[in-house]
Image 1 (tube, helix red, strand yellow):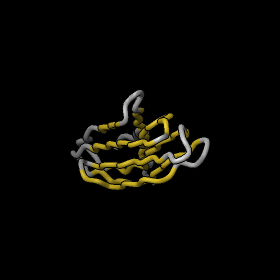
Image 2 (tube, rainbow, N blue to C red):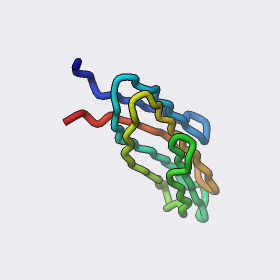
Image 3 (cartoon, rainbow, N blue to C red):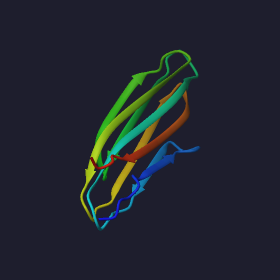
Image 4 (cartoon, helix red, strand yellow):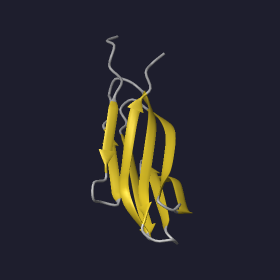
Length: 115
């Protein structure tokens, strides 16, 4: 078996309120990924709130809506997914803001190396 370098995938929303990361299938092996999803915001007014939803393969995985701390705040999700051989992994995160300004919305997925 040929050794491989662990995969690294990343996506940033840019100016949008949604970010998508599609990791293509690997026909030869199962893979496990550590996934980090992060929304960073700054406060635009005292009663600001921010929210994030994360979907994995189209299914809602996680959803939160919280008051935004003065100055700036974030919502972060870290999860692990094992992807079967021949299957892709589709990740999406969306955000909703009230009285806050999005600084960034991103997804990073790093393959966990085989032991």
